[in-house]
Image 1 (spheres, rainbow, N blue to C red):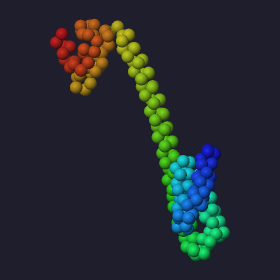
Image 2: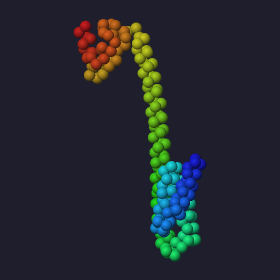
Image 3: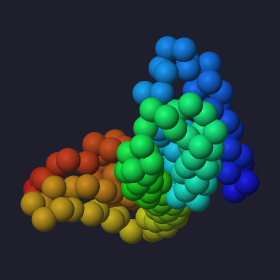
Image 4: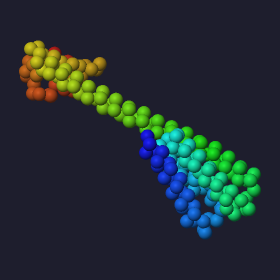
Length: 178
């Protein structure tokens, strides 16, 4: 929402401030390095739109800096335009990547919610099936493909004379001997 765009504006303003604070150290070497950080943060935080906003604001700032300071005497317009072009392409790619990350996170969150919902439904179904199984007036035993008992109701335990859960894991043929 709006917050992501405000973060983009704040990131660019912060990087502009850092650019001026670090001017004595960086000189003009990092004209587009700090804006790249602003674009990256904006794209990771907000996706495509905030990343593109940070890109546009950074290009405007860089152009203003180029045309109004002594930096223009150190770089040719062609060099500056080549740098801006590389910055714009890189920033566009970072913004798209940020958007893809956001979409992946949203999709993952959706899958987790669906999984939780399905798990809740499964637990409810299991409780209902268990209640129906235990309420039966007949002995019911469930086995797997190898003939191993996987489930049995209370009446089956009583019928065969076993304690609760004693039948689970036993071969069904052991009951036929009785």
